[in-house]
Image (cartoon, rainbow, N blue to C red; front, side, top):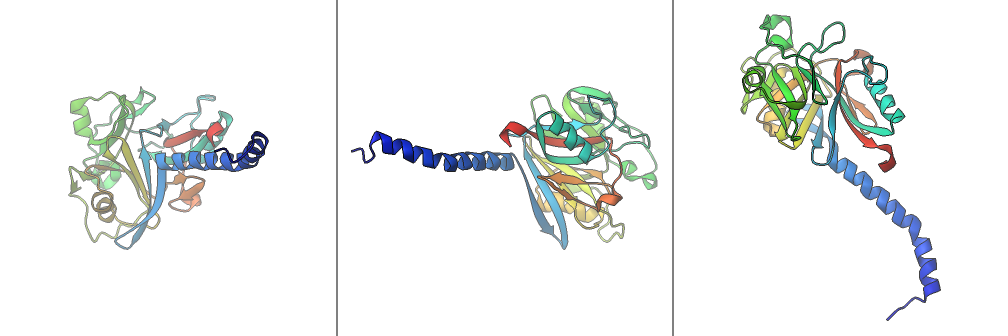
Length: 270
């Protein structure tokens, strides 16, 4: 039985159209957040920002130089503005990997399948910097879009063919064990950021919102986030951008970056 005559049905649909459009927009927003979601995590007295990226629904990319100018992006704002010029909305960004004083990656760097810097296998003095606190490692996404974290020596032996890769160090968690160099009661407290692949299609980033030591940061990845292998990205200069907000140390403490992770969304879907 039809309760509404044709003319009434037309008026009803016209009145419902704005609500239907709002629902569609809300569903699109929910899809974006499901593909890449961030949350505040409290663990063992410290506060962290944790961002999870589902590679089945989000495209995680690496960016060093602006393709339009050839110059390094250097900061998240420049990357965001580049995205806007190309019809993209920046959803997430984080600085990635080690770099030298000239602003170039100091270890392996692969962007869009192209190796721009080779694997760094140098054995430095552990007191000279975090990268020399071995083992260091590589975060990569292969050409099947599967993510993993592996030690530099394993990368050198296995020779994967990544779509993107960045080298940093030290490894925080190695096959479920904390890096043996970490000291539980160390007084070396700094803002810290890191990454793991909880599964081949689930990448998890974390940044401390207060200074912590390596041991506490590594336990976050192993005991709270469930990561068997995790890699340290950077310290006091680290910064995350997540759906319009910045996380990590105060902005005045950050410095120009060499590479940055990013998740963009087409502006038409925004």
